[in-house]
Amino acid sequence: MTHLPNSLQGRDITYLLHPVTNARAHERTGPLVITRGEGVHVFDDSGKDYIEGLAGLWSVALGFSEKRLVEAAIRQLHQLPYMHLFASKGHEPSILLAEKLVQMTPKGLDRVHFTNSGSEANDTVIKMVWFYNNAIGRPEKKKFIGRIKGYHGITIAAGSLTGIPANHKGFDLPLDFARHVSTPHYWRFGHEGETEDQYSDRLAAELEEMILTEGPDTVAAFIGEPLMGAGGVIVPPRGYWPKIQAVCRKYDVLIVADEVINGFGRTGKMFACETYGIEPDILVLSKQITSSYQPLAAVVFSDAIYQGIADGSETLGTFGHGYTTSGHPVATAVGLECISIIEERDLVSNAARMGRILREGLARYKDHPMVGEVRGEGLIAAVEFVSDKATKAGFQPVGLAAQAVMAACQHHGLILRVSGEAVCFCPPLIITEDEIRELLHRFDLAMTDAFAQIA
Ligand code: PLP
Image (cartoon, rainbow, N blue to C red):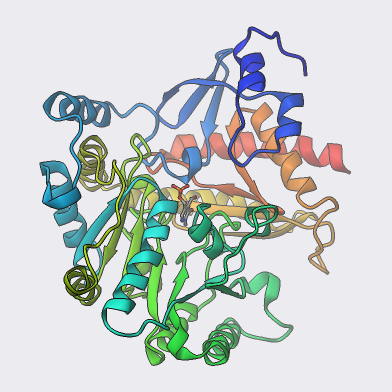
């Protein structure tokens, strides 16, 4: 596709390097330029409307035109546009949001530290845990165990926790403190005749073996998304989390629940830890915390970790970690307003209800010859394609069908995201039944087109 050099597309191709994009392919196609949003819809520069079926990047809980969030940002910009939290400074929105997060998150989480992004939050978790273990006299306990296909961000340390090859290749990652155990995906990796519970037992045994091989005195933490998002919306098998948790407790390994996508209602409960019975030591939140109207993330953690860090900040020296914009007042003011709206409108129940309709609608593709699995929880779902239903083999090149479906969806006015052989759904929490039905209709048109083209 050629673009005029002075068009937005032409200037984009000339000046930008896009995140998570094949740069050469992008030079050939140019960007889809989005100019405005309304509810669950966004519009491109030709005026064409799309349902944002992934809520931006799994994040725009309240849709693309929530005036109360805009007003909260403007009020705060007028009142106090910037203040930091370094060296004992404070400001109202960060204090109130920290209090609110402690009150609303599962019990045992008592303190909050703010960052700007999920990646920074996970980087911060690593540094907090290292500082804590140094402070309490176990300096060897530093390794983190994540999972293959887990996604925890892209900074050098958080990117090492991520278990997706595309985020490692060419970047000399992962660093040596990170280990990865198997993806908990029963449909793809469960053995013939193995029940879901037996599969979970096998994964818990694998984790225990890894901890023993590495040496329990060297393993600090296990990190996982309760439900994997970017790796392809992978719902944990029955019994998985309680069994993983028991192994972690046995070896004094901290549990980090990365709810950057899951948090604030996505799985049909306020937090996915409630959905799967997880009692984390550390909870990581971002994305829906502000509906992504402002960059913000939060690390919410136990009193025990706080006490260790607080002692260490006297014995080792100041807790020397933080960003210029950690707990930015505009971001935390928007976060407070966003959480109020989620609660007032009971959007968690809406996510559970709309999610059921979405997943029932997608279930009709289970018998499609090229659909391997339809899966999801709450208002997050995926359809995974196979070239052979019996062997579950994917396509060559990987993602061929999913990419074709995604492109056809875009043609029919639906934005989705591809992960491997799967297309992922994660619409705004505000979506209505009519809008879900319209989303399913556009998806159906796209499936027909894409498979006519592949066949
Ligand atoms: N953790 C999870 C579970 C995520 O899904 C993401 C982003 O998608 C991150 C961390 C990283 O967040 P960010 O892109 O804000 O750095």
